[in-house]
Each structure stands twice: as structure tokens, then as C-alpha cells.
Amino acid sequence: MKYDVSRLYAAAHSTLPLQAIGATTPAFTAILAVVIVRRWEQPLTYATLIPVILGVMIASRGEPGFHLAGFLLCVASTVCRGLKAVLQQVCSPLRRPLPIRPP
Image (cartoon, rainbow, N blue to C red; front, top):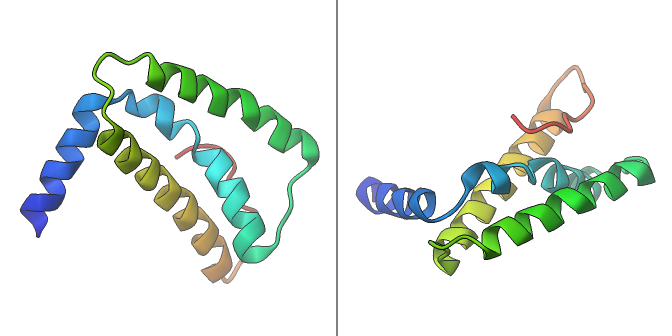
């Protein structure tokens, strides 16, 4: 199993600009916070995330080594990072605010 996951990870990393996709982590964190803990950010926060997502879409589409499977794996990884941030906030005894910046 570990070998298969490492091969998928390598395929995802070799085909896409990962930092650009990772930059959408705050967007997924904000969306998952609404879905899981029903916590809404200010409307301006959501508005500022739109250019980031659009930039990633443009950068990924123009990538010569673009591969749909690699792209979907990178997005899944980014969603999991956002989910981790939300679940940490839910499970934390201190109930700190959700981090909105990427890790």
C-alpha cells in the first residue's frame, strides 16, 4: 500500500505547480469551516479568495505537464489540509480561531 501511495504522490508532484494549488488551502479551510462547524468568515474574506482560486485555475491549465489525475490528487491533498485545520479547531480544548493562512 505504501508503495502505491508514494507512486501517486510522485505522479502528482511531477505534473503540477504544487505551491499554486497549495495556495488554495485557505479557501478550502473557509468552506469546510462553514460546512462542519457552521462558522462564517466576513464576506470580504471570501471575496479575497476568489482571485487566488482563479489564479490557480489559470496556472494549472497552462502547465505543459498537466495531468488530470495529478491535479485531482493535489486538490484532494489540499482539501485534506483544510479539513485538518478545521478538525484541529473542533478538537482543541482552547477553541482557538481557525488559521486562514496556508501552513
